[in-house]
Image (cartoon, rainbow, N blue to C red; front, side, top):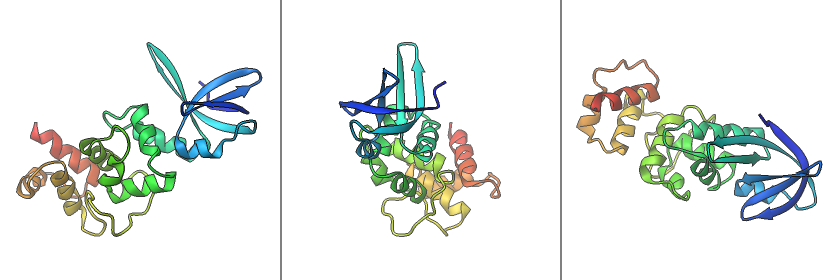
Length: 193
């Protein structure tokens, strides 16, 4: 496993960076914010995420470990692969992306290439309590709001996923209110099937 690489940025080819490490050029996919931090001819240390499949071996590079951690969190969301995770990171800097997820800003997440409303909502539902960003006020088109209580957050998330308010309340009625919001939402979604 490659955890990080240190070398000289040799070239940029279609959004990928070639990092020369001791004469070996590693092609790294990087998000736009990190691309702006890397200069051709300058040395850089890049944290690596390896995506290995039967037919490909992609390396994703991140200037900061925390950005790589967010990328890995995004990959934990159902139906989010490396390209979608990278597209989400391209919508802003790491802090802005974390804040969008924490605030449930579905509209901002949808602005990422290849991310539809359902995928954006899924990212919010699964990661809003895990991204480590404080929930801010004033975000539009959000799934849940801070200060509305656990029941309301879970119900609002279900409404954003297509439930009516009555159906959302009914789906949550038999679920323990002391459970984390995300767990309650997942249990309600399982009960629908």
